[in-house]
Image (cartoon, rainbow, N blue to C red):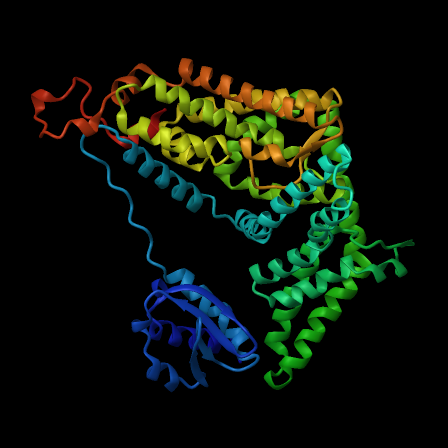
Length: 506
């Protein structure tokens, strides 16, 4: 079946199930296209059954359209692409005629976020987002296992509950020993392959029997190459599977395609990718340790100061596999506590905005509601609702992050190396996940000191340099209290404030 015919089939199905905006999720099994619907009443069952490519429909927890083996694997990617292309864009926020409220700033932040997302939608950055989509679903397990590992370390050091320690060690280490399989599964899913085949290829990396095989003149070891090898192996499997879907006759698809999808990438993984990815993983770990050991303070300043802009550009997603690789190698990632200082600078900047604008009740209410999440490392409400739309406070927040990063990096340079046993949490939520070479007391004290420096410098830089006089004149009002119609004589000399210049000009 040609690509054009597959796309035509997908295009015929889509309007009969209510169109792109009626679809909430898409998946497929051996024979059925499975979709979740917002409104079941929009589906035209009889018209669907009348389509030549549709063998029937089944209604269960999802709406299932039977297309047959081979066909469904070819039609589903086309259907997903059509749904993505046809979704209705969100309405753009409209500027308010008088004053600047927290809602105005939030709308500006959302608009800036979407504009940056559209402007930065390059192939490389789209690839990074897809890589992030592979690892983000693994974060809950990384967090849970990381905290259990921390508890187990405390019990081991204190000599408490010796009978429980082996059980906790198994819980903490089991997921990490098989993380390559999950990465392979998610890689295939993200890039349009069959998830279980991606997992099957990646499982080769952690199979104990791999130690009996020689490659490049040395014995391979289970886990060699880690998540980088798993990602590469599963990505290769996706390309092999897509080639098979295109060229293998449908009658043989169910037998030939899975076999070749495991066999060809499996051989390449064993006799190439495991060694190369293992060398790359070792180099990443060695470079991270060398960077902080030799240039800790300066490296911390640069990393902490640039992390918020990296988030804005979407480049922070490239760090996710690096964090995971470091956790695989040493049990923790030394980079995350330093990068977490960017959130501390953001919190300090938001508090300064709160005190500099005592009359803007709307914005102060937003800051008060978002600060608890900010202290726990969830910075988006403060970034897109406060600092980024205002402009200058975003820059001063980066200054606070740089100061906190330099503080933590300095102690790494002095020999107190530590990191996080999981990725995802930040701020205060990172405390239970800290681990290092100098004991928990020193580790917690240095991390807390870094947060304090980030808060303080972010606050001071924003309070002193975060506002121009014009910004204060425009922002230090309570526009929500002014509900009466404006007349020309009632306007201030500078004219009514407009949200756009605040974001763009400062």
